[in-house]
Length: 61
Image 1 (cartoon, rainbow, N blue to C red):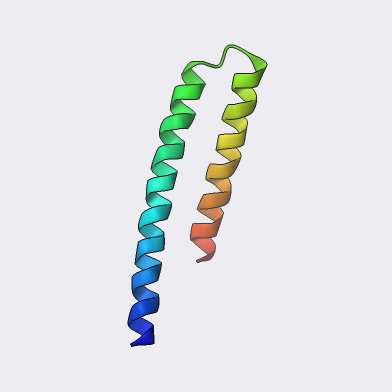
Image 2 (tube, rainbow, N blue to C red):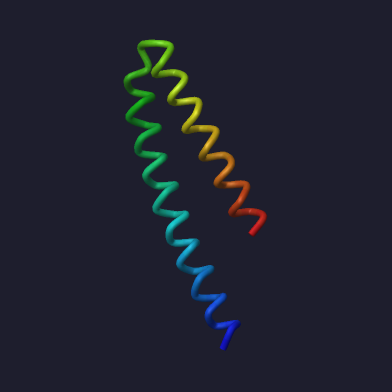
C-alpha cells in the first residue's frame, strides 16, 4: 500500500514538474522576444538556469 502511495505521489510530482517546465518555457520564450535591455537578459538567464536545474532533478529522479 505504501508503494502505491509513493508511486502516486511521484506521478503527481512529475505532472507538477511538467507543468512548471511548460510555464517556464513559455515565460522564457516571451522574455527572449523582449530581450532589449540587460535586465531582460538577466531574467531570461535566470529562467534558463531554473529550467536546467529542473531537468537535472528529473534525470536524477
